[in-house]
Length: 177
Image (cartoon, rainbow, N blue to C red):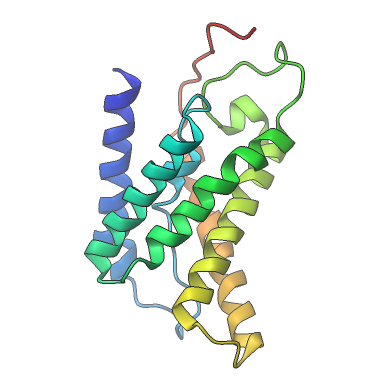
């Protein structure tokens, strides 16, 4: 299966799971909100250009905004994740290309610790920005912080569960030079 078809199927599955399963779960006192759809952005290949990554992030967020009737909140958070992703990957991947020659981020390719940091940083960034846009006020900072931390925690649990239940086959980059 080509990478394009595989990524289109991932996109459809992640959006469907978010819209038809996770969004139907009642939120615990408005604090714990599980988000998994942006894992699609985290799983994209390293070879995608920055502009392409930003466009994919925008379309991903806009699609979820369409289903959840939010006016661009998820699109803004996904564009931020797509913008920050290359910087986080640059920091976490080894500088020696012979050590690291996989096509996409995964626990097997990066190792569990760097992948966990990669997922945690981008998840925290996504949830902080999304929660800030939803509230658009700094009235009660403790509630804001609780919502960000609890939503990040449940999303990280979902991400690691998906990674363990559905391991991806690793593909090597052919030209590492």
